[in-house]
Amino acid sequence: MKKNFLKFISLAIICFLTSIGVTFSAEELSTTIFKVDTRSKDAKVKIETVVSMLKGVSEVEFDLVSKKLEVKFDPAEIDEKMIQYTVEALGYPISQENNDRDSRNLKHPQDSTKK
Image (cartoon, rainbow, N blue to C red):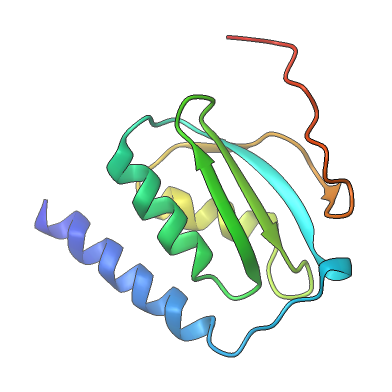
């Protein structure tokens, strides 16, 4: 328990230090949706907090019901693999749901397949 907490805190500090001074323009942002295998409220807080601290990330939203993590980020600063690695480092299984969706496309595609 203490080991996981220390791992989380150290990752949060690193993310915070790398995110200082970042500004974003709406035209430069990409949006990617990940599937994260957890429904824990604590996990939601951890994931949203740590991912939002990554340099290049502007918005993070994790829906516990659909298990979808939506991240808006600047692809010049960070890529999907780093976001995915960060969530995996927190101990949560994650997979990318789509490759790239432009931030100007504000409508979310309807999920026609329910599992």
